[in-house]
Image (cartoon, rainbow, N blue to C red; front, side, top):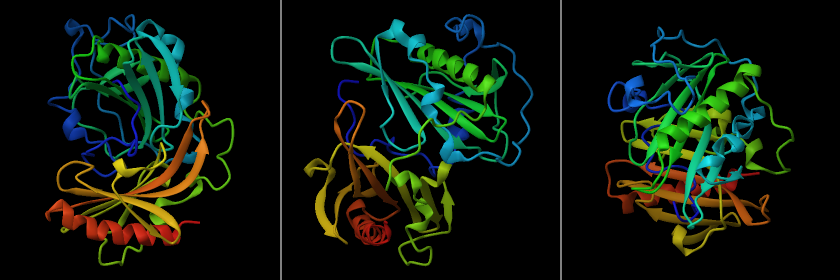
Length: 329
């Protein structure tokens, strides 16, 4: 990768609602784990077991405060230094995410992303590996990224993804394996790594994403389904899907789409921004500066997808963005 992402910092296009892990993509094909002959255990010095444990039982009901968990506590920059100069980025995307950038010196970098996810409720199908004391679902390189899913008995999933530009001179699955081992070592001592400081005053992190839309509105196709920490909400039905996603990135400009203003808030709308057949509206919320004194912005994304042409989807996206702007504290 050569430039930091602008809005939206969340991955796009998204394969499913923000609160689920798409195990059909993970297992059994094409995301079944490489076996030992492929060298998956080499980078972790034998920590990744070649055996396949039995499928884990569904987790017990969550007994932790999801918003109190800190994904940055699961990163270890020192373990990744052989791949370049490391930079911790706690302000990419949603509040359930933390990144470590591995700079190679030529302006390019590998992005190692750690995200917290709701457990889907049922054990994932397919091959599992053992990393330390945890079951992990993984797979080979796909679409210039490599992902490991750590199944935490406390009732959530830690997703570790290493991504880069096509043809980058780095073994992304080796990087993902190292980051996975680091995360499991931390989890072994404490399955609920807590944040050391509260969120800033007026942060979106204290808002319930599912409270920002009326499920009875004609533009909303189904009931609300919250993501991890209720920092996102999906509404899906026969006519399409609407997603409310909290995000952090650089201040908005014309690259984020057509500008409008509703309830005193700047809104930018752009068709096909989350893939074909989507329209995304971004509502500016709270400006702030990050740890490097760079101007940043908390924002709410409204993503609408369906069978209509994407330009027509921008009509309900804009309408719903206006409703969110009105309801934001």
